[in-house]
Amino acid sequence: MSQLHALVIYVPDSHADAVLAAIGDAGAGRLGDYSHCSFTSPGTGRFTPLPGARPYIGAPGTPEEVSEVRIECIVEEDVLDAVVQGLRRAHPYEEPAFMSWRVNGHR
Image (cartoon, rainbow, N blue to C red; front, side, top):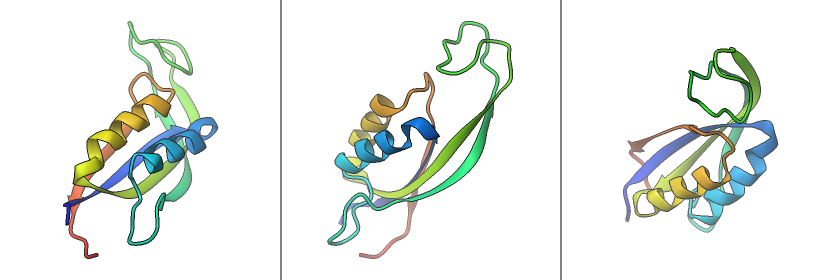
């Protein structure tokens, strides 16, 4: 059994379905006889692009607030790199906001 990781991603509402599909297709959210398992919740992302940034939304030096979705799922360590590659391809931001950490879990 592979080590489990929790993965949390913040994505604009407009791209949530694409990111969910990309990470699920790469192996995220596998729980027993189920695939593409996740939990989502709405929120507001806040950021200010620095000089030199090429933001998907907004302009350098201008604070932004964006309606976003928080995606949470479990990922087996052996597919984590593929899942991160999938989320980077599907996510519109220059610097996608995400985090992962090892978790204790039983299958």
